Image (cartoon, rainbow over all chains, first blue to last red; front, side, top):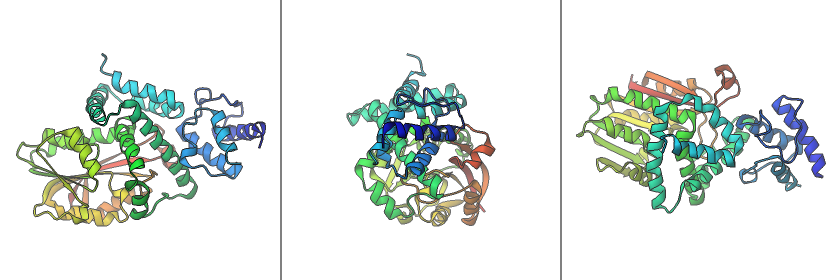
Length: 79
Length: 302
């Protein structure tokens, strides 16, 4: 799956989970840029990503996600 | 050096490595006062000495903590999806965690610093400190099951009569070594044993058991064992979490009433109790979102 396709899908997930239609993510986006991205919404994000992409992360695979780019990388590794 | 430097240094280092988690820590800081900073620094100074004996430093410990958090995120994801903890038997957890030195090492250090990083851990510890004093005169024998971080134990040592007996039973050798290192007091008698196999001739005036119930398959039988070990007028202090998925939690308490009902079934009545949520949210929302909660109670025999 291409990075752009993943980003578009992820962007919708972020908007839905954070309940904010204005969110626009880039690979550089981090929790410092998205106010609603905290430990609570993070778990909801993972659940939504796993469901949407039909994948399952191990704890070692979600380790040290500092930004959206690392999240995309983890998703790409699943395909 | 400012008193607040040590714990704040840890907060800052975590923020660099995990901005997501740092938001929660920052939000929870409003619950702390100067006493918190003093206690946390006192603890961390002792802990740093212990780390030094292992040839490790606080950066190592922070990495352990973040690894533990990743495990918790994975467990929380499972919990939110399936409504249960991922492990249901002691054997499973023993193979996965307790019998796995690599996991145990980071898990132990991660949990240790969580005592001062997690709001609910600190608040329940503070609750113990605020209330234990009133039991000091009536306590000539004190037993703690699962000493771990040694925080409760160190408070008990401070306030109990110098002739009071202080016993600790713990199933884990590394946990005993840790408590010995952090407290360093010859008065404490440590026994390496499963509490179910611990046969004492004496009964105790005060028993403390922090966060053990959720680690066993049958918490009722454990509480019945404590009832046997407690004097007729003795006091039991117990803590247990609800909705708290971790790699070694087996027994899921979905709410406080489930814990209270079990305590009652085991022959205990509540003298005083309290609870703290892990997140700084309105109670109704926290309950609806099944946010982890820490329950603590001082109990008497019925």
